Image (cartoon, rainbow, N blue to C red):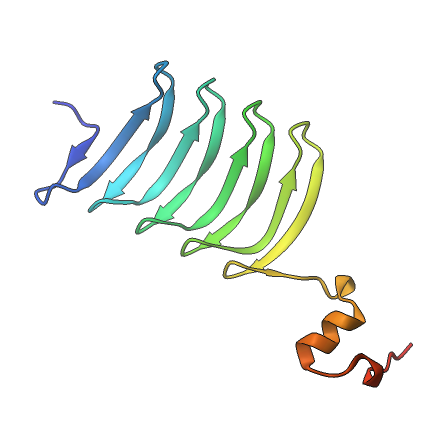
Length: 136
């Protein structure tokens, strides 16, 4: 009996699945629950290198994830909550060097306070720039 690529009684993908690239290399592996990705998944580039690894909850990315460049170097790492980036993320160049860091709150990038200008603050709080005072 084939135990991969199964459907449930309602015709929805269910259980462990594998997909392959045209060249025969594994493309994805993971499980479905009633037609939605659920649990731990891995994806691979057509050269066999890992593309990403992480978990789904009811079809949405959830928990810690890592993605990779096609040369095998880490591309990014961080966590999702219900399909939205959340918390601290790091991004890397294809040579493995850190490119930048970001923090997210339910998918929205949180801009560090050190990067705000007076104009940003004035616009956010609807205060004319001339009325802002800086304490040292």
